[in-house]
Image (cartoon, rainbow, N blue to C red):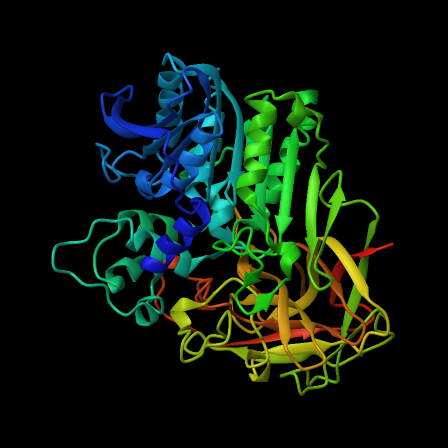
Length: 568
């Protein structure tokens, strides 16, 4: 469980550096209800009045010391505050529930201090990024800009994808952020994450976690999630924002979506003041070159702090040199050729939706099977492919090894070959490419499917196969069958009925090199990154399971395909 916190700390905070002229003062700042929050103020001895950068964190304010000192040494006042109920702050921690009003109150307090020049920005990632959006939609007058990295504006959309919940993520995070009874040790997470019904996962870990129970038992985006859905408020903001995220980050769809929304803000000036940096990273490696099992080369190593500093110099200091620097609205990294590209929007212009169709003779199971992938639409009937999805033996999200147990599944790129040898995975592979294939944008799969159970999942991966056989996952998506038409109004599958479904694989940019092959993998689970489908349709309170026989069709009238935005 602690690895989640370690990854977040690595993402949030810059390495510690000594700055002899910077001093720190700790004060207790009172919120509107009288709860006092511990707040560190970093100032250079030569700085009397300056713009302020603020971080509000549940991960211990002292861990931000290095970054805060760097800001202070550069002429800012840096303020770092423990969230309500965390570390040195008073109150009770309720995930995200108080961050809007507490953020507003903290900004109001800062704005009234003699050392504040009246222009305030916020920085940080993940939970700390969400505190920025939550404060921003409260419209504190002196909040000028934010720099949210890898975060959400709808917590439901971050936690759920296609009706499936990011199980290991939220279970591990809440296990590390929920008080446990004295002397209680967590159970083995491999076993706990297999517990059904989902409503019992907290007890399987070892103690009652009300927030985990609540999140896992509300799989539809109904009123339960309303307080944590800021999406409708974003277009009303008049605020520059710097957006950072990676393709492999579980926040990728949300962070890119936030940028797209803000580029359509009601205020014309705000539309022009959005910047997206989209790299090849996962949640713990933003700005780094090596992600999981892949080294993306020196170009992927980005000084995120320097980019944030430049952003604040432009919008808080209003430094003429920073303002004079042109910045592209979008900088995105192309995996494979490992180069950066500039664009004015996401998806970038100059790419067109191109279908790559699935083919086989009904035996596409495993990478040794007959599954083919090409741009030719099936001309007639081809027999469907089938696999059995067994909840008792789910397909792991990534290969399990001696050093990576199932509970430690990663979001980043790893060799998929071991999974592609399973009979419950359909594999469709192109011929060796005779020229590079470049694409950039949002990837989706359009599949014709059926199942013999009331519910079933379809998980899809886009894969780059190197000449040496290394199969690198590029983009991944999942859809729960009962949510095929509506997330709010699920409906069971009719056994044997064929449905056309769309699986969102998220934002991605890559160049598949000459000599490589393009591949699509389809199976029934991505466990434990996402919860298993019991296939019964009973939902989070059901404990029974069914083995589902799932079919994927590819014929002239049922042409299953992956749709890539290919360079024109």
